[in-house]
Length: 128
Image 1 (tube, rainbow, N blue to C red):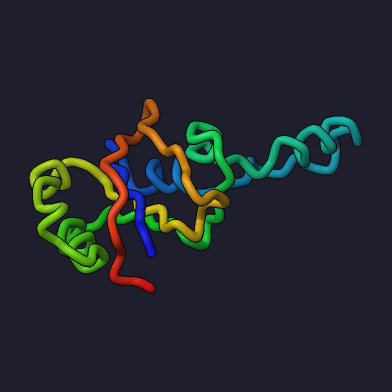
Image 2: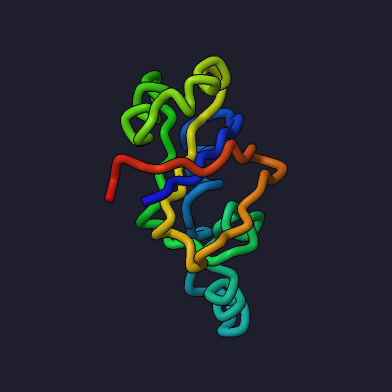
């Protein structure tokens, strides 16, 4: 299985997750009109990364790694860790986002950098 690697700068883990995963805006209270409630339903869930990448994504196959061992984690996920050793220094100040090919509904996805994350390439994963 292939994995697409992205790096991004975020203020916190919460900020990273709110970009890379789906989230719901707070539900309106019972005093709102049916129209306002319907609007809220139609606008949720939000998923900024999916909107920015402009492609189908399945969140079950996406990981956001923000802990200190990001580089070691990445090396464990890549069949040939030598292919990603150039990312070690960058990972000291950035978060790691992994999008496995099963997350994408396309044989040849055209993933690219966005204004929040930088695309670093696609690699063979240790996962099969």
